[in-house]
Structure formats: C-alpha cells, structure tokens
Image (cartoon, rainbow, N blue to C red; front, side, top):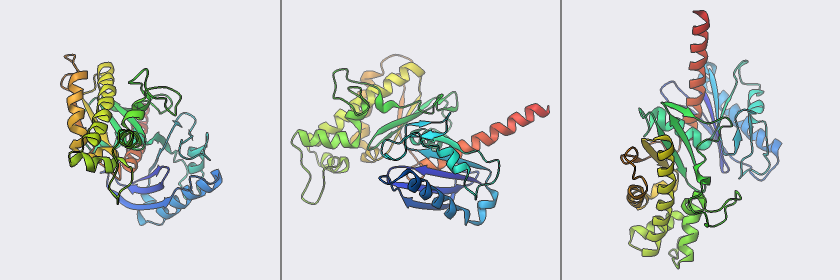
Length: 320
C-alpha cells in the first residue's frame, strides 16, 4: 500500500493506494490557504491522521506527495503560488516527521502536473507510451513529461512547466514576469477574460467562467467559440514545440478546461496540424486525460511505488 497526498489551493486530499493503483481509502480537508504556515502543516497532519485510522495503514511501504508549485524536489520544499504562507516550506521533512509514519519512509515530492503525468502513464491515457507530454489546463497550465518510458521531473522537479513557455513574444504580460505565456491564452481564467473582452456575457444564472464560455460555444456563440479557438491555438503551438524538441508521440490534456470536450479538442487538433509539420511529429496524437479527480493521488502513489522498485533493484544489484 502507498500513502498519497495531493496538496492544492482548494483542498488537501490524502489516500491509500494499492499496487494496482486503486484508491482504497480517502481523506480530505479544505486548504487554509490564507492562514499561517503552521496552520497549513497541521491540516496536512490531520489528513495523515485520518488515513492512519484505516486498517490498511499497517501495510504502507511508501509515501508520495503531489503539490501545487513551484516545488524543489532536491530540497524537499514547496512554494505554491496560491498558498502565500508556504514559501520554501520544508514539506518533505514535515511529512516525514509525522508520528504515524513508519521509520525509514522517505516521502517522494513532485509537482501536481508531474503527478498527473505519472498517473496517466501508469493507468491512464499515456499507458504504454514511451514519450508523452501530459498537461493540466485549468486555472493555471502545467505539465509533465514521460521520456523513454520514465517520468522526467527534471533536477528541481519542474520539468514540463509548459504553461510558461512563450507563444507570443509581444503577447500579454504574465504573472511570472514573462510575456505571451501559454497560460495567458489557454487557462480557464484567460478564456473567460478574453470572451468577456470581446463582448460575450453569460446567461443570467451563470458567472464569467470557462465552463460558461464552453456552454455558449456549444450553442454556437461565435465569441465563445473564438475564445476556445484562441486557447487551442496557444496550446497547439506549445505542444508542437515540445514534440519537435523531444519527439513526443502523445499529448494528454486534462484539467477543468479539458472538460469542454470537443469545444477544445476539435480546434486544438486542427491547429496542431498547422504547427506540427515536420515528418517526425506529424503523427502526434492528442488524447483527453483518462483520470480526473484522483490523478494527483494516483500520481503521488506511482512516484512512491517507483522509488520502492528502484530501491529493490539497487539492493538486488548489490547482492549480486
């Protein structure tokens, strides 16, 4: 069994995940994102406390943590943009020191989008694919790579941060400090903002959200369709660039914006044909993510499982 944590700006979720990737026990608390660092840490501890009451807790052999980023996997710290109290917070040490964890269990930390990539490669839309890009397109845009059949988080754990690739050198300024980032065109916030700027407005019972824009697009509203087309074009440019650099075979798209379905995927595939023109990327396939709510938890468990396997391989090598 693997203990998994998924820490975001809205909720802190925990689960026990078995060797097949099945969530067998779950716990969840709201994230006190605007409160102090100790209050945040106590909430994580409370989720672990809840998991430890399950009968299967005694079989836990690894711990994985997926966190909103940026993260620093080498240092074991996190600085989530949407959790102001945590800046260079030593999350790995904090979890490792929880009294209910068994001695010798070293938590594995990874970013939430990298966790999504791990989950989709283990059980989802990237299963069996040697080289893939997995993206989360939601309030922000993130990603993770599978290269040569293995998760590639990079030295600090932030490889695949595709939301901050510039696709418009004279584009709008981004919160990260650059201009023309994918996130500024393709995130749910950007879609809603652009649609409203062009004169679209939601119905009387709706708010200005990407989901509301998608609903209008399905009804044929040209301004809503244009907002999703703009988002899809930015995503296509970034995906094609990644494929050209790394020979990605499959791009998996998940997150709230992907819930728009063909409202997003139809223009995305059309634009991708215009950007991915070289012979070795022309067959690049785009797939919707297969795992939704549990992707972060399953990805965290996958990382803990992989570490345990690597330790076993190393021990076997030394023995021989």
